[in-house]
Length: 468
Image (cartoon, rainbow, N blue to C red; front, side, top):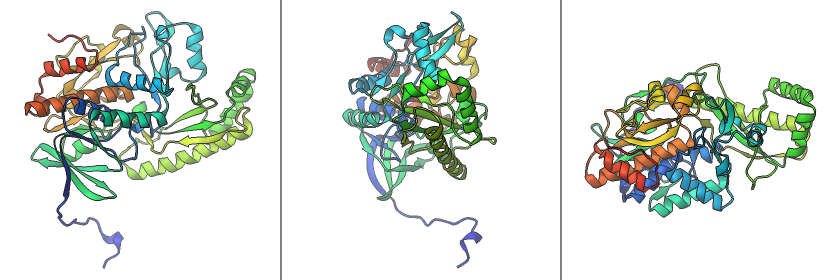
């Protein structure tokens, strides 16, 4: 036998794979988009199976500790995101697992309310400069308890009638020509298959549509948020008042300390946790920008960044505990079990959302969600909302497959603004509903009746413009 290093490739022997289930719809990936997809498909009458590689649902919102659900309103306070996202927040509210501004404060410029979120370093998530009023204002944004959300997502999916299979990694679409017929997945039980009439790719990185042969765009601008990876963690038992008083009473000393920590490779901008059921908690949402282009599909790079990020976490914790008042009795409460990925491959769909759509007032006949356009300064002041068409979820040349995650068809700059957690849940709700309607009508997903899809989404609580 030659040494392993001498091999360039190997050929796997062919084998028969057990069909574990047959379904109408199979959703690959249990992140926000996958959860929305599975719930909507099952509620619309499709026999639905959701498979997820980890032992919990929620993806970035739970395992990634990206526990912030932002941009639910525009700068005037008008709410745009409803449907399953609002249902999730309402259910968490009953369990003490969320926090958000009072409705009367959505869009407010009241300095006390604005400063509350700025002082907590949560400005990007809660505060924008409204160019129409030339003032800082507060958005409707929620934060969630990721552990309670894991349980709530389980309940929502199971109550919908969908079947859920955790610890199962979708590895390959089953293709018949250019039509998806199911997926192959790996687990501790081995390699098995699920046959389905529609496959929904909610992997985040387009794992299914890439392996199915779809066209895609993988270009990312390293200056944008979506090109960065992150490792988030929570620090518990922090005396927030003591810490805050030190920062305000000795700003020069605090800056000196943070400069020193930065040189040592630590993180210097934690957030004050604002969840009432997590008092005395500091949240660290730690980006890992790279000098080279970040590639969330490069397992060697993922490994290097994960190792380095965890070392930076302990450097930060040790330094804060030793040097910063308020951290004397703190401890590392939780580190994210999965590395945060914010962007990657995007499918080339029947429609590609572009920069021109941010300055357009067009209402597409296949609009599936209207989103607040808060992140483009003067443009946002003139164009506070953007319509997202269903065609962004439909691959150009593949049948039997929809995309319901951040990999929707879009240019990089636009994806950077509209690929966050609540947006992905909205895409999922639309994709799951469309998949179920396609199965009922006996047509491919691209042939779904737009008017019917619109009407069903509206009945589900999604707020959509009237389509003539």
